[in-house]
Figure 1: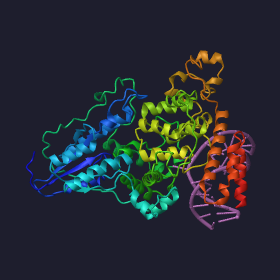
Figure 2: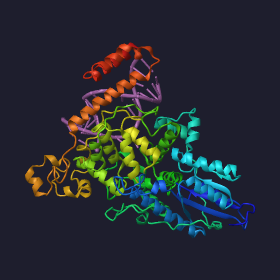
Figure 3: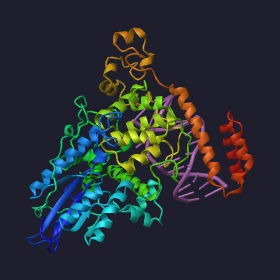
Figure 4: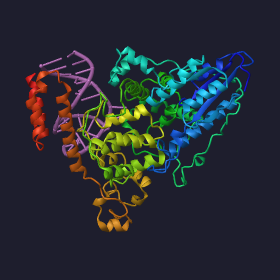
Length: 549
DNA sequence: AAAAAGTTGGTGTT
DNA sequence: AACACCAACTTTTT
């Protein structure tokens, strides 16, 4: 240990924000004690056993919280961060928490005589609890703490304050309140202060995903995106080089079946881990916009996508129980049904609808799918066909997506299940025709479901309609080599619409108990009384009562 | 109170 | 490819 002289050491604690560029926490830490020969910088990342410990009971290789694809991406990002720090005369100090990450940080702060702790603010509930523990310890120990907002464009707390204490619940209102984001830190570094003595601490080399013990993962396809800041910046520049593409970008017009060359930037994993700064990305898009005559605007434009990200971060920060139906004030209370059989078929890509199954297999293998592909399967699981709770689907996405981001994932599941933000539950994605209009030949399906690779295109989206002679010829018997549909979309989607209508009607009845007429006991009695006609009667009644008022 | 808006539906016609 | 139409949601704006 170093002698306990006046502290001139700063720690930058990495969690998200795995980058050197536009990193205010790193920038502040490297300035601490600037000029002094004794200045030291400790760049730390702590491996969290609760995030990484293998879970043999999980539906696919990985830990309980993360699939192999995301773990691999994280490790690659850490390796790249270490390499970039080394080029600047520093390095990443990789520690392993015995149990609790916060405890590990607190111990190191004390043992290394740290004078200033810098880390990026994180608004997720898990992170808030963890960071409070560390901040409380540091304050009590007289350690200066700096926690800048740099993961998002804006500070969610500030937006909520500007909006009168409540988060804006529509994108439009969010954008009008937000204004222009702060400029990124554009500092070019030539070197960082050296790392100080780390005493008895075991500094780990960045492990490989094989070393973490997830069993045999040799069969796992390696997703076509490597983690790390270097790769993030390279990909961003590549995307932005095509100025016309940037200027004309409209999210809803992308092709969800494009997998060799995705229709989007596919930068979401880099934003999730902070390998790429959203402010720097925003700034670079603006530079392109200034060089062209016309460009698309939010919500559909590229900058609009970054604003969506901030929108969900802000709402998730301001709404208690954002990740649950119960106790969540903005979430419709819907009596989702329980069917382990249907859920497992969805999760494992065994629904018998090739479009749905191919997307779920891409999720499992790559940890990434196009946004509209996510819509298709989320709608299918919840309000479209299976009527299963969005929290079940959310958990699967959260574990398997490389870019899974707590705020955005939950926000989109609320959206797609028509539980919040979006309410047009009659608009249901067809598991047959939606994909077909982008990819009539079914190339996407053929790639991810090899057993269907020779199915004629007339039947590829509905293989159960293929004549048995054809099924035999292409060696794919439906019911044996590929499953029969687990639900009939025609009848299932009709039933889902009906149940959504009932749930909405009930939610409206219960929504305004202060308005005397809507809580009329007669109406309640009617809507509960006759099961078969409950939807029709309550819906009619509501129209009637609306006219009444 | 009424109209318009809302990132991305499906089907059928031209 | 563009448009009307379907059947209809909630929230915001006028």
